[in-house]
Each structure stands twice: as structure tokens, then as C-alpha cells.
Image (tube, rainbow, N blue to C red):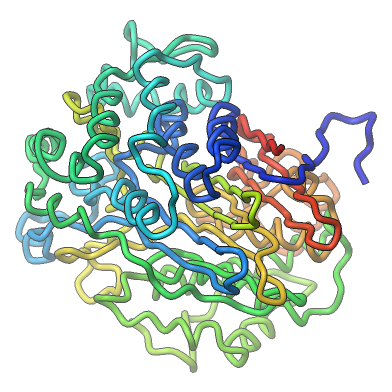
Length: 531
């Protein structure tokens, strides 16, 4: 129960439609579409295109996209993989011959062919009722006329000023510096590109002058990309079979690899079956979640890759037997000193994003995520087209034989993951927590807050977060001193998080009472609204 004398905000309630995004203008764009008769998928595309303009450090049309869509009354969840592929020339022999042992996050080699625009068009062709020509209009207006930079956007922008200077990205350093909160930022080149996509569809991005500009920009920096790679990217987005796990009377759905949704399901499966813990802010709760995450992320790094080119043992990793073995490794008294080998005795060896969700008057539910990966992605801007390019290829290994080794036309291991909760064949909650590698930890932390510990949907998003990463546990300042001291005694090495962990949105479909309930991220400029 919220203490109304303390800072915070309440969940948002509505009866017809609801949208929750990381920026108020994007939420309003989604609601405008819903009020005009569009469905949840239409509204999501309108909202994300706005975010690609006004939250440019997190997302853009030069990024990738994943989506889960649950049409009401079908009992089905559809998964769309809109992640891009490496160039056809990107083989391990080339990298070894050039003595490249790892991919730098600001190099042209970190840029895969962007998948977002292909994904938007593919989704709309299957489920939409409106076209890109109509849905991109708000984003075009914001790019052309400008929009005031919000406080959190400005804070993120300032943190990567060095990257932008290194890359010579002068468009994003107006007057030689990063914008301040309230400064009007315009992107006329991007407006022209969005207008072309509205008129000619995704083809305007993957063929012609926009693709030529991007390819020339990348090749000038040593990239292997060709216009044929971009032509092939036009239809790269594809529907795939979602994966799921039963949990606390619900079915939790995720996109399959190359995304990290499998790690969410592993975490839920490991933690399920443990005895009741000491509550949402308790020491044992935090310790168990940290330990489960350490084990699950270990397996992510060992096995997660593009399943079209690597054998990803999803069924074995999600099997009750394997998850039971992992659960048995978790002690309530001490941290695992040394993690066992990934998949031991069972398996063969071998941060910036936007998330949004929409529910429409007919009960269709959309869980949607779009990303440049790291802040401003690679920092490489195709200046004539105004397209900032992601750095998803940074997720590849330059390691012959590794499942995630870079290869021609291969998708890298991906962090972005939308989530969907179903019950009795009906969608009850599209949800997600953006934030790079944090996302599986963030999603499961939220789900436990909400469906296990009974926090309301906004409190479940607000609750302080922690994350085991790089051998340490990164702790937000809201985690209590008592919990921090207890974790240290158990053997965890704690460090203060240098920035907030992630950003979540969620909409609960209360079918019994006939209303929608939403929460949005206070760590960003998030807003949930309904009508």
C-alpha cells in the first residue's frame, strides 16, 4: 500500500484503451490513434516512431525491434523478430585476417542491418488497420518542427557526449554541446526520411538514397555493408514461435532466441518452487534473485545465439529437470563462490532502449520494444538521411566455434525482450523492462513484485532494483542498508549503480472488473494514460 505522505504516484485506471510509454508525447500519440479507431498495434507503431525522434539516445529507425501481439479472442500470442543481420561479407576469416579479435562498440562492424522499419511494416501488414503514411505523421512533425528535450533525455545525452564527439556526430551536439532540458531539438533530415517511409513504405529505407547514404557512411569507416545487404533487409523481420512457461497460475510468453527472453523464463523457473521468502524488500528475496540471475546469465553467454546458425538448446534449458538442478545450487546462507560450468552434466558445451505497451478497446494487447542498444548506438550518424545507427553487432563474438561468433547474415545475441502474461487463454498483461543486459532481471523482479508479493502495478515498477553484472552486484540507492550489509556478509560484492536500472511499463487487463490498470517508469519520463 502506497504511503501518500511519500513521493510516488498511483496506478492509472481506464475502461477503453490504455498506453504506457517512456515519454508523454508518445503516449498521447498512441491514445490519439486509439481514439481515431486504430488498434493496439497501430498505436504502438505511432508511439514508437515518436520515441525514435524525441528519445533519440534510446531508439531510432536505425535500430531493431521485437514484438509480442495477442489479438483478443484468439488465445494466441504472436512473436515478431525484427532484429537485423550482419553483412554478407562478415565472416570470421575476414576478421581474423585483419587481426580483429573483438568488435568495438563504436566501429562500423558493430552495426547490423537495422530491422525496425521492416518490423513495423510486417506487423502492420498482418495486424494493423492503418498505414505508415498516417501513423508516422506525429513523428514527422516532431522531427521537422522540433520538441523540447526532457530532463532524463538530457541527462542520458550528457553521459555520452564523449562518444558523440569521437564519432563527429555534430547534429547531436547543436552549438557544439549537448542540449539542455527545454532546448528545442530538430532533425530535418530524419523528417524527410520518415516522410519517404510514410509514402513508399519500408522500401524507402532499405533501397534508394537512404540505404545508399547509410552504406556509404559505414564503408567510409571500414564497414563491410553493401546496398544488397540492405535490400535483403527489407523482408528480414519474421514471425517466430513464442516460448513460454507456466508460473503462478499464468503463462508467461517471450520471444525465442536470438533474443534473451529465454533467460526470463529460466529465472522464473529457477525461483519457482523455493520456500516463501521474506517479502519484496527482504534480504533472502534479493539474494535468491541474484543467485538465480548469475546462473541464468552464465547460460545466456554460453548458449544464446541466432538459432538459424547455432544450436540453442532452449527446451533443455527450460526443462524442469535442468531448472531444478540450478535451483538446488541456491543456498539461503551464502553466495556461490564459483559458478559451475554452463550446462554441467546436462548440456553440451560449445543498455538503452524504449519499451511500450498498448491495449485497445477490443482487448488486443501489444508488447513492443525498439532499441539502438547502447546510448546513441554506435554513435555513427548517416547525415544525409538523419539515421543514427545501432551497435547490435557488439553482441557478436570474434571467437571461432562460439555459438555467437560473427558470421554472414547472422543475427547477434539480443538483449531486448517484450513480455506478455496470459491466463486461461486470454492476455492479462503486456509488460516489459528496458535496459540492456538488465532486462531479464528487471522483468522477473517486476513480475515477482506484482504477482507474488502483491504490490500494485506502479509500486512493482517503482521498487528499488539490483543487478549482478561483471562479478559484482550493482545496487540502486533505494536498496536498504540492512539488505546491502546482509548481501555483503553472504559473499556478494556490492557497488552503487552509476545509473538507474532500466525502465518498465505494464498494463494489467482486469477482466473481472472490466478495467485497465497501468504503471510507467519513474526512472525515465514515462507516462501511462487511458480513456
